Length: 470
Image (cartoon, rainbow, N blue to C red; front, side, top):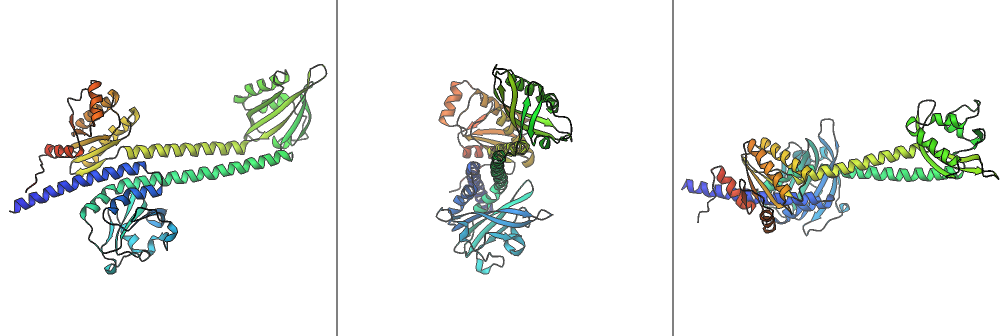
């Protein structure tokens, strides 16, 4: 009798693990598509609403102490039990000092800690700012650093099912990574916005300076090659006004060697009257070694015979604007790279199902670059979890061609060299037809229709089996 009860318990555990894996994969997909704080919370809150949750919250760690312990937790989003967002201002407190809240101290005490309160009236570590009777709170990390916390609240006392807690534990590292990437993107976007506003202010200042003659203006006698007059030119170029009058030749020597040839050609074309009005952008090397980004706008005046006699223009120091533009471009590139890295991390998740069994659900199109990431991530997952069976689920892959099939075969062979067997699941009707039409040979790879059947086959590979006892 005890053996029968143990077997029934084992079957129930396996079925629960399968449900957890399927729900975890679904939440992972939603997190990969989240675009803001609210949609990140929604991906988790929708799970909790199946268990009657009344309110869900998410917050970010905005300050850590010297030892990496959280100091400040700032609220980011709230969702009601009806699925509607709730304004943050409805909470009595939105910024928490961790040291003042025993509950927060508990969830940040260790990597695995949860704060589970099934009856707030009997709990010492309850959150007095939220009038709820049952809580689940957990913190999460990314790359070893605390990034935030999530809270789930019920109005009535209750006992939480192990399935809910297992799923929350499974998505915890994924949630930590998503929040870390979101915070990085948000900070970069804020810096780009600040820099853009600064650039606009600088542009306004430059226009004002031009209107009041704040730029260096000049007139060159083309018959002698020397300045007729200049306004602030010597100040801008850091030259001594008592020195001999500057010539076009001496000015050309100040132009950066890499820009000099083009600058001379532009000016000579204007002097030859082929382009009467010119604009040149170049770099100057000043006496103290500074490199300044300059713009010259000038036009040529001719005499009654059509011969060029003078060259009049404005010299603008564009260094501050140019450096701000370079910084902005660098920030934008960081945003793009952070987005690419976030998509890469979320598009190749590793989900441990049972001891020695892992699942990699693939979502979206697969190119050669992503195929390499898939292989590397899978091999790392095999080592980290000591997996013997790998399930590659391609339900979310919209199209399979010869290239993708070759990539997947390469991944399967690499996994085999690491000592793991690989199953491919999630073959849709359209994908199956494409494989046949293209003549792709997957004869050496075990292919199953659904993730559930893949899990059964994986258990069989390990000598385990699910049986239902009536």
